[in-house]
Length: 117
Length: 109
Image (cartoon, rainbow over all chains, first blue to last red; front, side, top):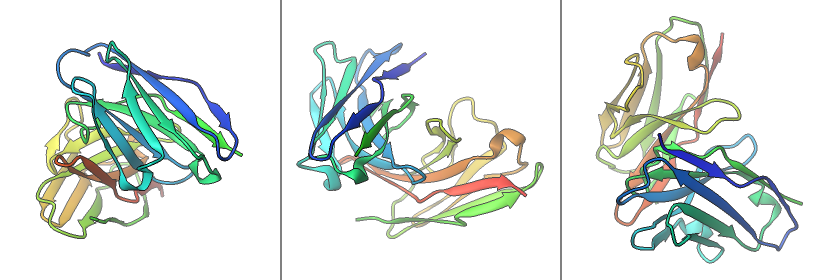
């Protein structure tokens, strides 16, 4: 049973950065990928980017390039998403996902609320 | 960039109704189309992948069809637990990219 547990809610000032973690347990062997998806209040879903831990390969949505960094720890079971130069429009619920490749959004974390004000 | 549209944006239905949602891509995306269900305050759940394949454990009342630019998602007999928002999602593998449709909210009539 794959489980993704994300870090807690954050309140940030405009211009600052936030770093959210996502720890995977269960099936974490072999090749897989983490992705990050966000959802602004009352809005739809937006893919931000992802990482293949085995190779360290990352891909970012064009909208976030230059502001986003996705990494994993040495064990490759915890993913991190750092978003810089925060603005009020970045207020959202941020989800991590896990799948066999980056676009494969099979397993989801519980979400981390980031408020920017 | 490929744009995804969904219709309707919302619909009201009753238990037992047949519900159909359409999703259109701005260009040919083959069968690179998934469907998700999201309930308020919860993470989305994958229901259909590759346009028409039911994910493991998903009830058979859910189905998907289509290829190219036009796709359909159907619930044959709406159940109380199906009231939610449904999103189509286009994906590309190389380079990796994901685009969601704007969503369709299904609520009680």
